[in-house]
Image 1: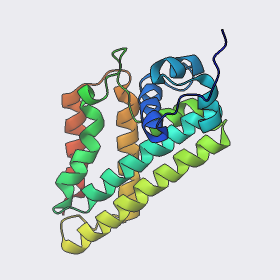
Image 2: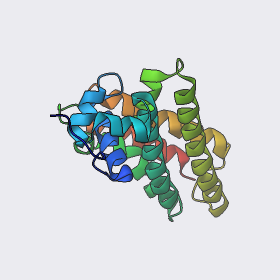
Image 3: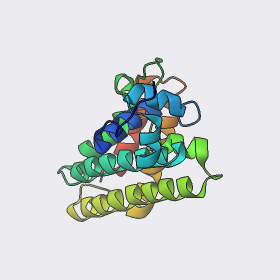
Length: 199
């Protein structure tokens, strides 16, 4: 007998957070709408009405991921001394136990994963990741500029260039982590980068 009545209500924010975790662990291409229906316990029609198609649902999840990360980044860059906080940000992908999915592989960074999987063929995804990278460099540049002013960070390079280098390091580390990572070597490389910033 066909079901009647209104579809069961669900919490949109909570559902998006759970979808983020699924997309993060499995990737965009290998996560089907049925996977989302099964994992979230929400009817297919309700998902489409609330979030649109899978691509839009995924990009909403990426935006949520970045919003959470940016808040954490801003808080970290607002601490003193700066360099230990910066080291913590950079070593985060090296702690693989925080990036292990249900299939036993590292998650990496969801923004970086989106770059690898959807950019440049998807213009909206390209805009999302470009904005995320721009915000990273803006936030870190401001922090490094303050660090230079206090004498903690070397003034031998422009803070914009230093921040761009750190973006390349954190995204490169996140990408490499998906293929397996020697944590000791990764942390040693990060420590070398941090020391290069020290006044």
